[in-house]
Length: 101
Image 1 (cartoon, rainbow, N blue to C red):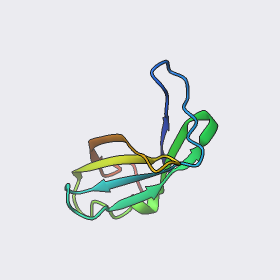
Image 2: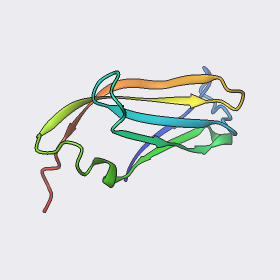
Image 3: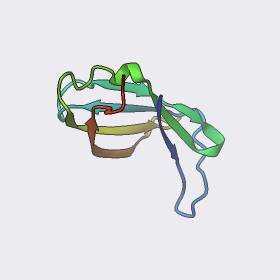
């Protein structure tokens, strides 16, 4: 699997307790398209840990016959009180694995 791990910290660098929170990661071809990958995080509340596991089955047929493609991805944390926090938004270049059977 392909883990994406984040430690949610305050301005002093101390982990923020995110117990009772949830987080979602999404990968999209364009801003308004449906997610091609969407997964929930495993939360390590006291330590501020947020880990998204992207399974190889999620990416196996993502590119079809293309060598590579640019995608949008992002994650949002929903705190126990309902407040939403954007963890990140970026673009990623997904490329075919050249070392495969």
